[in-house]
Length: 461
Image (tube, rainbow, N blue to C red; front, top):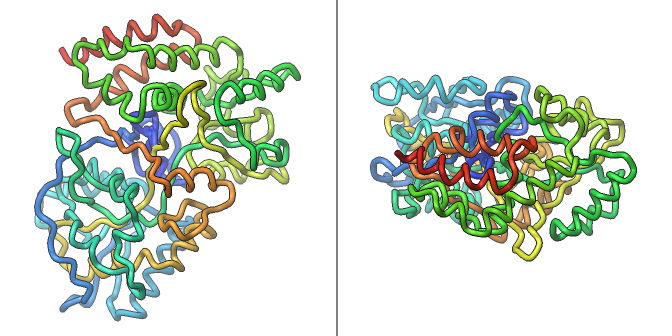
């Protein structure tokens, strides 16, 4: 379930999701980060490598620190991080040699990991970059999580909390959580966005399930609207719907459980067909905006931002992404993906940006001190105001439009299930390809499930 635009991931998502999630944030490059998903991202569970080292909060003999960042100069995230770096140097005397590398930073780092010339001590990148592409060269941070955040009595573990700690960790083949590989300092998740100016009643009273939501959508259709925007050229976005429906009808492990069944028979359990029928209803009921299946990103999300459609299922990067083209006075609001009728509200996928330390860091003590510096409350406040993203700390309120997301995350209603390494490629080769046909109305729900079962079996053979 696209990070930042993570990924989204096994859930399209990537969440999510969700879904392989690439680094993206509200401010990532467009089609590449989406189709890489995640991403959810997508969000591979790779085994942790190496042992965690002691988390000294003293800089030791280090007087400088080399940092690469995936932000580009001028971005909101770059301005936030520059301010953190300036404060860190002022308070510790440690010089930070920062390079603003942009979204290509992860790709550039990968070939250096097996050499003695890793060019950075610290990387400011997406959470999924550390659990996927950079896992082999990243230092496990179990002990670092026990160090205190600068100027507070709280540990990094206290501030990050269970959901983000798990998101930042690797998993073994049995699904057990391993060591965290980075320290998240801002988050992202998925929701259904709308213009609060047009639907003020939904700000405090969103639909609780899809029966209630379909009532709203049918009322809009009766007025000649095609109420849901979707850029059909982005396969991971198309799969958001089926993924989140499965999380509701089957559970947060639904996609992973079916994907790893080498017989393909799990797909034939009732909850999967129920989820597929809801997608079929959306596709054949003409709820998606005209032209969605032949659009080129970001045409449809731009139409939504211009009030030509009413709702869009997307990650929390969306408001920043469409701000320049939004209708005057557009009030960005969101609510969690509603429950499938008769089921629980689906857990969300999460991603975000984080600080990781390389095993071959030349200044490890300074790197650990920097990781403990970033999570101070004032910087979490700036994540909300400057970055307009989700703060990691539970005691920091998010932008109002993300209240529903933050509530789910703080309540640990987070889906951290991931495909095992052996299932790499399943999403793109099987799920996304067939889901496109379901979303475009070319397959019935029954045909989709039959083909998911047979193609999953073929994938493993």
